[in-house]
Image (tube, rainbow, N blue to C red; front, side, top):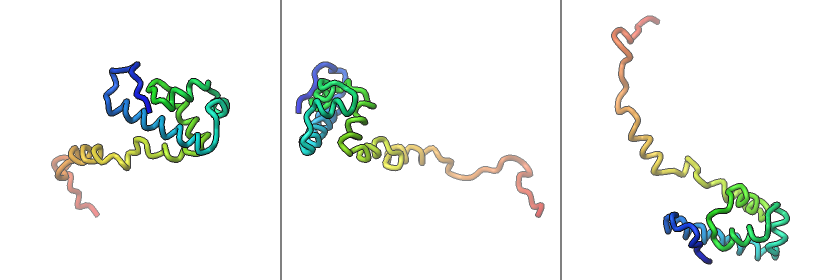
Length: 114
């Protein structure tokens, strides 16, 4: 697992996550006894692109990464990425913006007309 030093503008946590992700892709490929070249051909990319993913280079296109996951049979594992139902922080912020009480829309807004 190598961290790319080409883009030091990325936070360390991001670079580290990309490296871990790449390592996991490599393990998945090896478990399937696939060569980088074979995976690259199946995904329509070069062997170097697969190598870049596996070594944790952050500049690979998201669509390419999803293609690799698809070919490895792991695309479903990506469905949880940025899932709004799992965004606890976002839910808290949203709840904080909700009105604390209901307001009447104006004078005479209560209509007792049945």
